[in-house]
Every structure is written in C-alpha cells, then in structure tokens.
Image: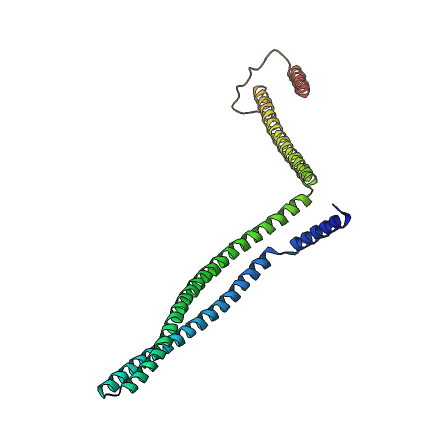
Amino acid sequence: MGLFDRIKRVVGANLNDLVSKAEDPEKMLEQAVVEMQEDLVQLRQGVAQAIAAQKRTEKQYNDAQNEINKWQRNAQLALQKGDENLARQALERKKTFTDTSNALHTSLDQQTAQVETLKRNLIQLESKISEAKTKKEMLRARITAAKAQEQLQGMVRGMNTSSAMAAFERMEEKVLMQEARAQSAGELAGADLESQFAALEGSSDIDDELARLKGELSLPGGSPNQPQLPQQTTAPKSNNNEVVDAELDSLRKELDKM
C-alpha cells in the first residue's frame, strides 16, 4: 500500500469518527421523521396529480365514445336516405374517434394502475411514518435513560467511597462511646442510690437497737414498751451509772468500728 493510500485511509477514518461523534441519535431520528413526512407530502401531490390525469383521460375517453356513437348514427341515417358517400364519410369520422378511444382506453388502464400503486405506496408510507414516530419516542426514552445512567455512573465513579465509609465508621464509634458513657453514668447513679438507701436502712437498725438498749436500761429516749431491768438493791447508785456508761461506751466503739 502506498503512502498516499495510507494517508487517505487515516484521514477517512478520522472524518468518519468525527461524524460518528457529531451525530446526535435524538436529532437524527427527528430528522429522519421530518424527511419521511416531506416524502409523504410529495407522494400525496403525485397521487393527486395522477388521479387528476386519470379523470381527464376518462373524460376524453367518454367523449370519444360519444363521438363514435354519434357518427355511427349519422352513417345509418345517410344510408337510410340513400347517400352512400355521406355514409362513408361518417364512418371515416367514426374510425378516427374509434382509434382515439382505443388509445385513450389504453392510457386510462395504465393511469388507473398507476393511481392504485401510488395509493398503496401512500398508505405504506403513512404506516411507516406512524411506526417511525412510535419507535422515535421509544428510542428517545431509551436515550434519556442511557444518558441518566451514564451520568449516574460518572457520579458514582467520582465519589470517594472509602473516605465516606471511614467517616461513617468514625461517627458510629463516637455514638457507641457516647452510649457506653450514658450506660455507665446510669449504672453509677443507680449504685449510688442503692448505697444511700442501704445506709438509711443500716442507720435505722442501729437507732432501733440503741433505743431498745436505752429502754432496757431505763435511759431517757428509750422505748417505753421495753421491759425494765430489775433494780439492784445491794449496789450503790453511782456504781450502776458507771457500769452503764462503760457498756454504752463499749457499744459506741463497736458501732464506730462497723
């Protein structure tokens, strides 16, 4: 292959590629429908002209038939009157119109067939245009969907998925930490509340025990329902107070140790 042939092929390939890229499918479909409609207009005009020519030929044929019949009657009349020469002339005129009628009849048959063919072509073209419009709308919808999908794919490719997922993971970790802190605070608050109630219950037990002891020893603040200890008649009063104070101090020390 020569150098110029290779250059020609490269240039042709580049031009074809440019044309292919420049073609908009939607615009091409619209242009195709427009051209088909223009053809339909021309075909309708052709059908109308063919029908008009057919009507004109049909009229000429009918006129020729009338002339044939008229000169036939004239020839018969001339013979009835005994004028054979005039009858011959009438028959010659009849033959002329007969030849014209035969030619018109042939032309009329051709025009009739042509009109029928044009009518069929017109119907087919109208059907094709209707089908083309339907296909155009379907292809337009497919083109729109393809463009939308292409844009979506471009957006997906442009997204930084790894960084977005890392951000979601960080946020999830923070939420988990915050939930854990809230749960710990709730548990601590519950434990503190339980300890307070336990302390109240413990102090109440000690107070009850102290009141019971005071009642047993008949000390002020003791419970009046507690049984009284028998009085010692032999021991002096001062010695009883010392014993009670010593025992009370011992109980207090034991309570402090608890």
